[in-house]
Length: 90
Image (cartoon, rainbow, N blue to C red; front, side):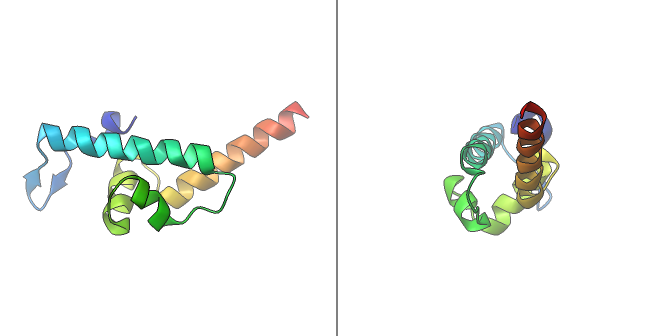
């Protein structure tokens, strides 16, 4: 989950408050769930960021920090894992 990696992200020399961290984690997890549900279609960064109620730039930075992969790489790896599973079972 995003909370495992996110912890106390520095921003402008200040740490986020615990309540802010919880909210950011909730938003990032909502976006991750959206990616998993919609990976079969073309996903645009702005659409995923909208799900998280964040600007695309802010979302990209926070998502990459939390999940150690950019949203684009995350989607690609998810699709490759799903394709490999289908190939292995057919």
